[in-house]
Image 1 (spheres, rainbow, N blue to C red):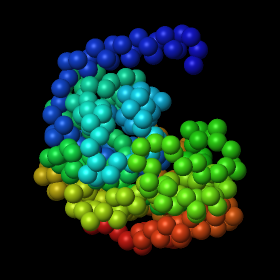
Image 2 (cartoon, rainbow, N blue to C red; image 1 turned 45 degrees about the vertical axis):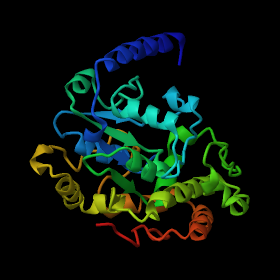
Image 3 (cartoon, helix red, strand yellow; image 1 turned 90 degrees about the vertical axis):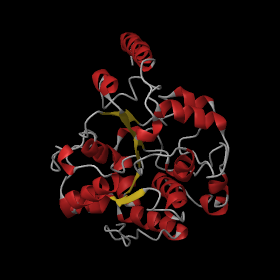
Image 4 (cartoon, rainbow, N blue to C red; image 1 turned 180 degrees about the horizontal axis):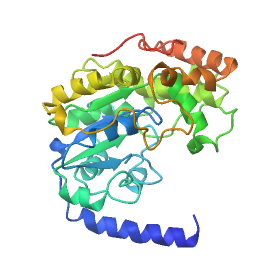
Length: 314
């Protein structure tokens, strides 16, 4: 970003900071979406953002874009044990949930007018899966959060095609994050040392962070677990399930299911099995074999090398 761009961003951020002073949303009123980067969170957020008097907060755990979390020691895929007391993390998230953390990044999918008119926020997380039990334990939302899971191979194929990870080399080790509560990584250290490729690293991160909510006794009870593939194939039925859980009239929504998400990869199919199987075209045979090895090690119940999930949540 050049000097002029940085100056414009700084001015916008200062303005949004002043806007935040006049906003104080009750966290209990919010709608929370959890998923992985490139896991479909933008699409489902756009689907539910037509609910009146809501505004979207965009990916507040991006530690380069939202400095409050980097300052307290968060990593990119932060884990917090469910019963842990971490006051700084609670306070930071409380500010997010109240609409107090506004900048050009977090307001990417909304407007100042929507923020001022909102009586609830839609918080779109794509780096908080390993914190889901802790967040739900500490913040009592009136509407159960959405936890959207997508086949790890599809997630990784999309990440590899996206510019956000292009700076990483194809051959790389798994570096265990030096962050608080990194025990979920350390317990697999011996296996993680065998990883040599970026695609393996990404699958391992998916497995480690998603095992936290997937293997929790309250999975699909304290939050609504949704398979991305089911959302693609049975969009209306899946969304109706969510709205029924929330006791919201489905007539509130006016979104077209055939509309592309703002973050959809150029040229990718948007409908049916073509969309679900797309990763098979993007990944080589060697990549799939490497990724299968990682997936098999972690023994993830809901996904195999088949494009469709082996376990569908309903």
